Length: 98
Image (tube, rainbow, N blue to C red; front, side):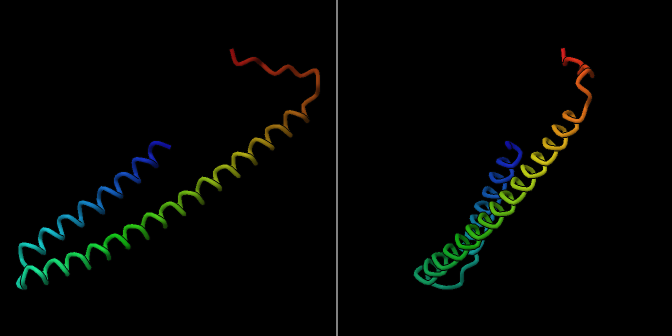
């Protein structure tokens, strides 16, 4: 679970860092007035926020799907093991884990 959380943090950090680098580059190379530049930055920051939110939602949805598939598979395996142990003759000893 922590690996998945680290992936989320890495994704968010990458999005934020990319946005900051892009905004800084835009400021340094802006040929228009300060007011126009601020309006452009505002617009682009909204676009970046929207893209980041969409990416996060997509990633969250894919992760939830993976978790659901893993739970389903674990349940299936648990049922298989249980059924196989029930099919063993009663006199069969199951060795202890110790």
